[in-house]
Amino acid sequence: MDIKITNAHIITATDAYKGEIGIRNGKIAVISRKLSEKADKIIDAKGKYVFPGAIDIHTHLDMPFMGETSSDDFKTGTIAAAFGGTTALVDFAIQGKGMSLRDAFDTWSAKAKGKAVIDYGFHVAICDLNDKVLDEIPEMVKAGITSFKCFLAYKGALMIDDGALFRILKQANRYGALVMIHAENGDIIDILVSDMIKNGKTAPKYHALSRPPEAEGEATGRGIAVAQMAGAPIYIVHLTCREALEKVVASRDAGFPTFAETCPQYLLLSYKNYEEPNFNGAKYVMSPPVRSREDQAALWKALKTGDLQVVSTDHCPFNFKGQKELGRDDFSKIPNGAPGIENRVSLMFSEGVGKKRLSLNRFVEIVSTAPAKLFGMFPEKGTIAVGSDADLVIFDPKKPFTISAKTNHQNVDYTPYEGFKGKGVVETVLSGGRVVVEDGKMLAQPGSGRFIKRKPSKKGLM
Image (tube, rainbow, N blue to C red):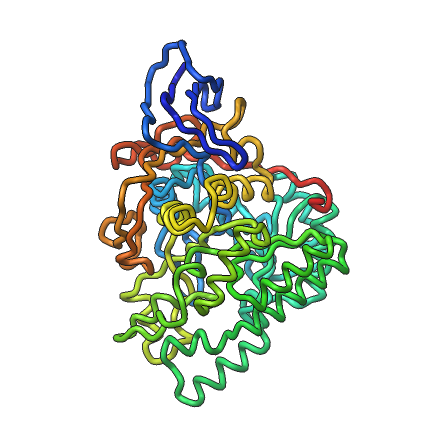
């Protein structure tokens, strides 16, 4: 046996029990109350939880956007993810104008090659639809790309129209792929941004005011309606507000396969952050923007009840100095995005489980198991079971933490969670049976992470 984890308090989305885990050839070979077999390495998990490795299905590494490029590449980004207990991620390959889906996939594969320290996959964002591109969808599914993203915002850049969304939904569903949407009304936002700039309203807070919750609610409802007409499931990324949540809940209650995620920033930050002095509000410029305390409460409740299925990060970091600062005189020039890939697990444990908003099992479900199931990685990932990948996190629930950009591993000069305190720290991380983090050190070599060839879902995810 390669590795044996002893004295483990094992937590999955459905179970909690004491036992020991034996790992061989990158897989979980045996789980037992007590293992007698010898192992090359023994990890004592006494007093700790053992979770399945977290999965972040919404990241933007090495992504060109708004004239800049996100500051984490697949080396620094996956290292930071691993330190935070994430053992697999799914990034977005963005189709440029005139580009094929295969070109987008190949471009992002090259970005990751030789750099990733954990396993990774890709969604492809379809931004320029034609018949040839539509015909590529089954080819992408065969290649392990079983989800596609469509933007209903960023007019003139990434945004597509409802007709294109309808065609993509029908074709993707035909081949068992899931379509994700960025749901904001790009047409209205474009006008609001222009009007604010013309009227001298240029500070970071006007980013939020130009992207009101009504714009998100309308686009969410419209996207769901288009999916219903197409007879296809749909997944709403980074949902932030009650207006959008109501549309998701109504659709799910009516029996339609509608899924949605939120992110820690929408659970923990608020509009007040945009009013921080000295242009610090720019640190929180992301789309959609962070909302009100009332919206936070609604999102926490929805996570508990199952109306929201996943917590991801939308990790898209830009440095405050030299990147965010480009918008000092015009909020519309502030690169949209913020870091978070390293802090999700501890924040969700501390703020969720620690404050009794979530059970331990539900916590595991939203950061690991549900992403694996929805995006074609289960049961290889997202659980602790014989035959599954040995993606495991040994977690100290009592150890305190204070988040700081100085101690984070993300390649960015700030964190939106600076000074956040809590309890619950990732201690040891295994990805594919490899110990990648131990004793505060990175042990994996860049390039050791593997591409995840994801599986298509059962038709309709019903």
